[in-house]
Amino acid sequence: MNVLLTGAFGRVGTAIIDHLAERDEYDYTYLNRSDRDEYETFVADVADYDAIRPAFDGADAVVHLAGYPETDGTFEQTLDNNIRGMYNVLEAAKDAEVERFVFGSTNHVVGMYEVENAPDIYYPDFGLTVDEDAPHRPDSYYGASKAYDEDLGRYYVENFEFPKRFYALRICSVRHEEYDHPYGDAELGVDEGTWERGSDEYDEMVARMKAMWQSRRDLAQMVDRCLRDDSVEFDVFYGVSANDRRWFDIDHAREVIGYEPQDNGEEWDSPPE
Amino acid sequence: MNVLLTGAFGRVGTAIIDHLAERDEYDYTYLNRSDRDEYETFVADVADYDAIRPAFDGADAVVHLAGYPETDGTFEQTLDNNIRGMYNVLEAAKDAEVERFVFGSTNHVVGMYEVENAPDIYYPDFGLTVDEDAPHRPDSYYGASKAYDEDLGRYYVENFEFPKRFYALRICSVRHEEYDHPYGDAELGVDEGTWERGSDEYDEMVARMKAMWQSRRDLAQMVDRCLRDDSVEFDVFYGVSANDRRWFDIDHAREVIGYEPQDNGEEWDSPPE
Image 1 (cartoon, each protein chain N blue to C red):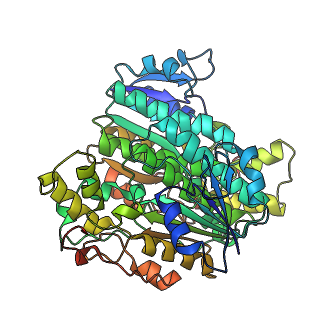
Image 2 (tube, rainbow over the protein chains, first blue to last red; image 1 turned 180 degrees about the horizontal axis):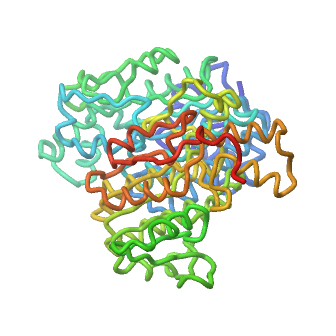
Image 3 (tube, rainbow over the protein chains, first blue to last red; image 1 turned 180 degrees about the vertical axis):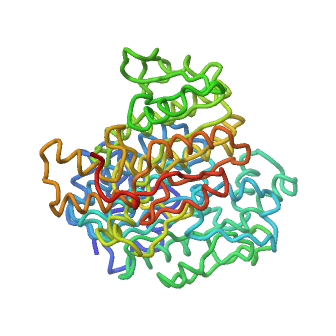
């Protein structure tokens, strides 16, 4: 299976590369705005249709991760990178007859369920579950742009011949390899001198990440399950590990694509040495 | 109450003017891309923030109808007129501290429920009801852009001080005054020479409109109810008359804003003489 990975060298893309690139059944092409020495790269910006179009020839699947990735994005930043970018990638997939589209969406499509309940929602037994049918409640221009991207993807699979399958992964929190644990964001803050270990901010960040963390291997497994699935036309799955404190549903991903997360933030009592 | 009406001279805008403009309690300002002799007009394009911003000073409510209005719109047409246009209008409403935002959305946000069931869905007792919580299933770039607009409006009311109230009206089919009945579209086709009275296309159009019609007075009443409401932060209502054949829910609008539609497409056996 030929898989085109856009935004290949971000946190999520590298998790896929680390865990799936060596699999015999996948032949990856990496599309990214900038080059990396260690990988052969198709260098192009998803905001430029003509530049990206050739990368889609011969692809069986696209895993689309390129885009502005944070909630601080302005409307303009999300317009070019996420809204126009998604249109271009869907158009290229349609024209090149790419069958399968795995989309790196975000929990921020429904981020207001967290915002209105924070910080209580970060602690055990809060009792809220947000599932794939929850009405969109974006917390940012970023979240709104990804909501549009999901809707546009659904329009394509339901109206055009290609792509035939669309998987919207509302990814929660995937970290770089050196911070791939529920203390990752808090330890990153310590390393950057933003706050001290044991401060209120540190503790709240850990509490949040014990709910929101998706380990790199769990993310990669979820993508793998989407690439193997033959049942979905359009569906939404939450990208989160089997954290006791999660408020996002994973039963739907278990049932539909066979997601079997290996990690649970609650198993960590302290950061790794 | 000072009400700013954008896209004032379209089908929906003129229905509001015809039924609400003479009310003592409303003082309307008409914003439109082009002038009309009979009305004082603030001429500006919603794609240009600086041009529209002065029109928002002193407004208590905006009824935002301007935008590309049809399902045939390209991505580019919906990007400027509907996506950037909505951002500009929301920003202007935020900056000018406009309390109330009534948005002319469309049934095409969830248009695929119709597409996949047509034409059977146009006939009595089909049994489908699409309500305000139905997942977005746009049937066009136009529908996808309006879905984004609703999500962006929700982001604004839930995150900024203004606007405080947002009403997304998923309008079904409001016609010009001379075609304001369930035979309107079909008779328009006859008048334009597109088809003949009694043809299959004519009959199917009538069947569809008996389900989808919202009379001009019912649309105006729904807007009036939104302007008087003091309960909603964000909500979605379907703009349709009390048609027996409708598949869009109106109980929610009855309960929340007191919508009491006066018309029902089923009461018409023939076009008016």
